[in-house]
Length: 84
Image 1: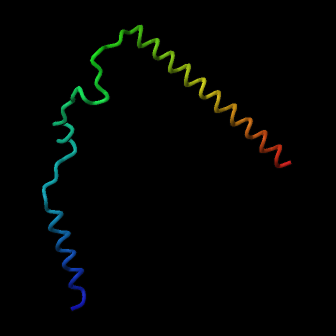
Image 2: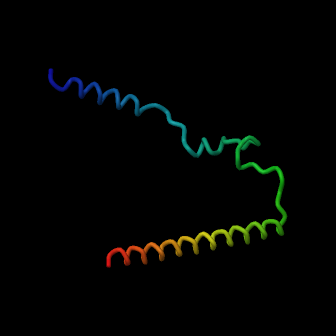
Image 3: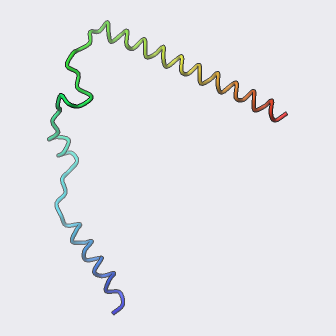
């Protein structure tokens, strides 16, 4: 009979949907942090060190932003020059 394959696939799909799934929240709740992960820090930074790190990152970000703006302006000037 025509369509038997479709019905068999439908039944298989319905059976597979019945299985018990582990909730993502349960996975996160049972997650244990280990010292092997990349985000584990054994030492703590002092407030002064954190302030220095913050200032350094802000300076780097500002420098990168200015560099990108400079490259953008130069490329626009070159593009306008080539179009004339």
